[in-house]
Structures are given as C-alpha cells and as structure tokens.
Image (cartoon, rainbow, N blue to C red):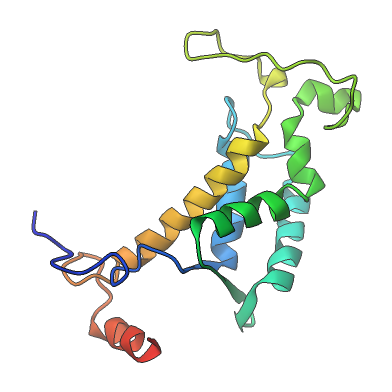
Length: 179
C-alpha cells in the first residue's frame, strides 16, 4: 500500500485540533452510543426526547452554516470531552439511561440514595439480564467524544490525494483559500 500522507504533518492532514463537529455528527454519535454503550444494544428510552434536546443544544451552542446544518469548533481533546460531559449529562433523558429497566419501572431516580449498589462484572461473568442492563455515563460521554473525533478524521481522510475517496483538487484548493 502506498504512503498516502507522504511528508505531510499531522496538522496538514487535519488530524489534530481544531475539530469542527457538526450537528448531524453530534446527534448520530450520541444516539449510536446510547444504543451500543450497554451489554444489550437497544433503542434508548425516550429517544425522541433525546433528539429534541440535542437539537435545542446544537442550535444554541453551534454556529449555523445553513438552514439545517450547524458546526462547533473544539480546540483540544479535553475541551471536547469536557463539553460532552457538561452538556450531555445535563440532559435528564440521557442520565436516566444509567438506570436499569427494572429501576426505571420502579421509579428509582439516578441520584436516589436508596438505589441499589452496582455489581461489577468482567468478561468471565455471566451476561447480565436485559432488565438489569444500564449505561455507564462516564464511558458514554468519552465514547461520544471519541466517535466525534473519529468521524472528523474519516471526513478529512477522504480529502487526501491517493485516497480512493478523494474529493478532488477543488476541495484542497478551497481549504487552502480558507487557511
């Protein structure tokens, strides 16, 4: 396989910050993590409410590029992770995914003192029951941040000469004019 990057630096490849995160990327990464950040992948409870709150969030926090597309720039990994922690964990419907289905049905709250203790498992433990499955919120927001960065890298990779997904010189010329 040929070297696609040649002697280009990480900054020239746009693999380092700043990263431009899109509204579409945010929603898709959050919902994807809500589905897969558990032992038993399922559509999250209150998925529609989560999408509505994410829409309000990006419309407030991101810069509108067009009628239906918003972007936000993050200058460092820590800035992105901190933003995900602060903003995503402020959404009650996401925090409720930390409850198992059984706890949710009993009306237990995320911060209830009477909430049972967590049972930690490893790869040798028997799989948990679907009703006992919950989402680890610390892993969730970090996974969202990682997915957003990966999405940005994939988008930028498509603009590299030599990539089979290369968008052509027009994209490179436009980037040069923007810099």
